[in-house]
Every structure is written in structure tokens, then in C-alpha cells.
Image 1 (cartoon, rainbow, N blue to C red):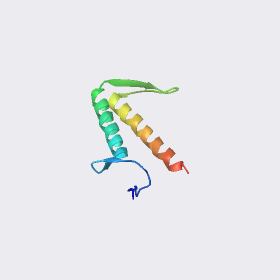
Image 2 (image 1 turned 60 degrees about the horizontal axis):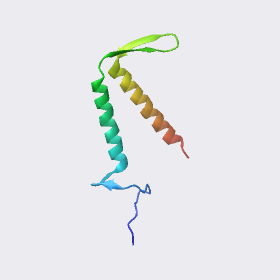
Image 3 (image 1 turned 30 degrees about the horizontal axis):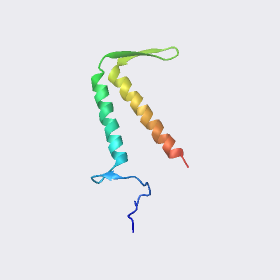
Image 4 (image 1 turned 90 degrees about the vertical axis):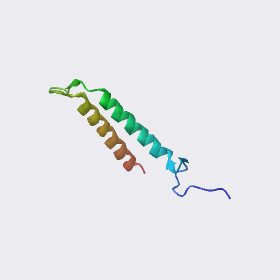
Length: 78
């Protein structure tokens, strides 16, 4: 008989670590590297107010907003 995944995800793994975990780890590592490589300041203009902040704060905010949006969308699927 063939072995089946108990989680039902049907994904594989490498050395006991799932592909999903490896992809998430790679995204986090690349994101941290990108944030550390961009240290200048940025000006963000909303409709009326303008905000000046270090680029690393802007990038972390954008990454957090994207992660929260993905988590929210995944939680609303049914």
C-alpha cells in the first residue's frame, strides 16, 4: 500500500520539513535581507498627509500588512 499524508495537504517534505515551511522561511529570509539592504529614508504621500520615515519601517509595515491580509483571506475561505 502507498503511504498517504496524514495532514491531507498532499505536499511533500525535505528532511522532515514541509515545502510550505521551507517557502515561508525563504520568504522571511529574503524579506529581512531586503529590509537590511534598504536603509535610506522614504516619503510616503497619502491623499493629504505626507509621512517621512526610514525605509526599513516602511518595508516592515508593508510586509506585515501583506502577511495579515493573507492570513485574513485564508481564514475566510470556506
